[in-house]
Image (cartoon, rainbow, N blue to C red):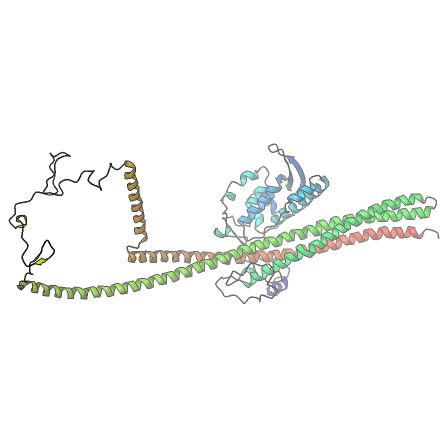
Length: 601
């Protein structure tokens, strides 16, 4: 299993017979968050120089520079490309890599050496020797970072990288200028643009990945895929290729950062301890040989053995440095690579989640539209039924009204008047009719207006005794009269209450659906518009997911080939270092053996 979905033997079997097995694979396509020039054509002098056959970038020196503004010191690294030299800080290398990752979210951008933690800085702040070792290590790893970019099929044509290598360019100003200033904050919401050095893709990336295609059944929870720290199973239809890539990446990371890294560091530490012990032992034997000056052959043999031990100390120190540079640093780099691959697979995973969420929203909107249309159909059916009922009711009402009018035209019999009786003062009923006062007769004179009041009358004028409404009682006799006029504060309070009541009434009327039919039709229109937008969004998201899947798979295939080559080189360097160490020790100890045999017994 590897990062790629096909190993080298499978690729060799798939190749046509007329293509040699060692032929270079076809270029692949990457996708950028902003429009970039198509790779393949040099855009400036730095680009032309980079793509020269024998061009190599070197980090020649690291110089500590004092900052005049903050009174602090930082290290600048001198980059040499051809006859050009440019100085950059570590933070500028870091920002370059971040910019490249934002422009090319589907590419595996090479790592740079990690920052030291605060505890590491506290440990080495007074140890200039260890600080120098750290700077030298950074020089080597930054040089490897630049050369990996220079040899990359797509990143080597990125003009931002060319500007980084161009003398006289202020990187801080470049960071605030296009295209860097126009980069989207979230690559998931960006419109991806194809960037390829060829019109075709790699063979392994030529098969499109459709998020709507049913996937193969996944492994059981108790299998190897479970418990490997892969992304949570949030996808309904995950692509099994990328599930395998996630599992393998996690396993690869655990192997490198776990026992392999610890064991290799322990070996280097033990070799350092052995070298230090050999140095002390060699000096001790050389001193001991001086005490045996009475027996020159013995003294000479002791001195030769001491020199062999000193040679072993030198060879062990060289072995330790070779293992640190050629083995430990590549392993640490590939630990970083595994984390980078996890990030890229996570980006593709999030894009797949985005696609499925959009599909869910579209399905929900379609269901809502079906419910609204069903409600609208039901409302129309009820409305038609009510119209028919009103038509029938209006006909019945017309006939009933005609019958009532006919009855009114007929003379009505007089209703006999009830016995008029009165109640006496004692409370007894009498058969005599109650007397009628003259004021109650039909021919009584016109009465004065009981509500009118003579304007000429003063406030103390005498009220008309025949009009009980002519004048209200005085304040002393009227218990309901105000003792004083209402104050302005009370008026304002009533006005405020009225305003609050008006606002509340307006809000309630806004909540109440006064026109359900118009509301339903408005909701149906909005839902249809949302469905159209979601369909377009889903189409775009699926196309982006397809492109991202092909680009990620293509770069994983490229990385797999690079990993095989690099690990092969690491193993060769490991063998060469031990071979040199063994040869050096063998020569020294063979010479010491010959001298020891010359001691007369």
